Length: 261
Image (cartoon, rainbow, N blue to C red; front, side, top):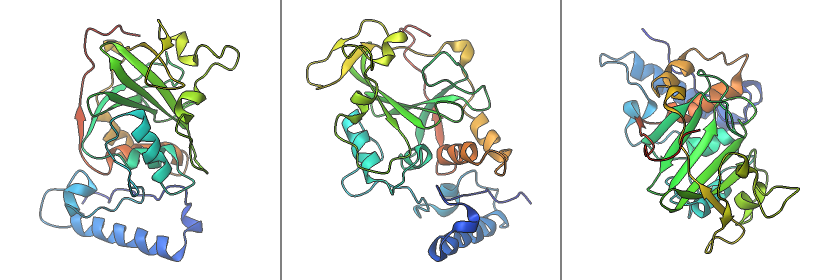
């Protein structure tokens, strides 16, 4: 019999769980064990076992969407999460299936930490890409690229954990170059920056894709969660759990005509 998936609650060490949180964790564990000891093949995610029963702690609040179509809707989603909200909590709140590309490249302001902790590109709707790093120096950042014209995106970024509400322009203000206010820190990698009408405070630049040789199979994320050491790297395990434990992942490629980095 396979061991039950190890589910943790965001921001709560086991010894510090309140009564309700302990009850919730116990219920989840019991349900998982029940599902895993039945006669049917072992399900790959909690959603496979429990159908429409949503066990996530981090879910979109009132007025927020788990499938943000633009940066403005991503800000609304972030503001709706229970605080202090972590990057893992934001990822957990996204609707499934997640459409993902993964890269081990370190060539970014939000670098991957190798193949075992890749940088993820999550396609949300037609025009928004959400990026997250499973571990490493960019693990507390969620970045965004929103298409404004073919091949050009406005960029934004949120730093977690969130302990207060974000302003509408927070994602744009976060990436402004502190020494040169007319450019963003994204200018280092993304050429041809310019102000973008209709996006106050934002600048657009060329969209790019990760090099093919840097790509990591998305199936490896579930494997990494299964072998993750919760005692030694809990935050990494929480990020992997937030991505893989709540529904299916589907591979999605970038447009091949985009320049690679």
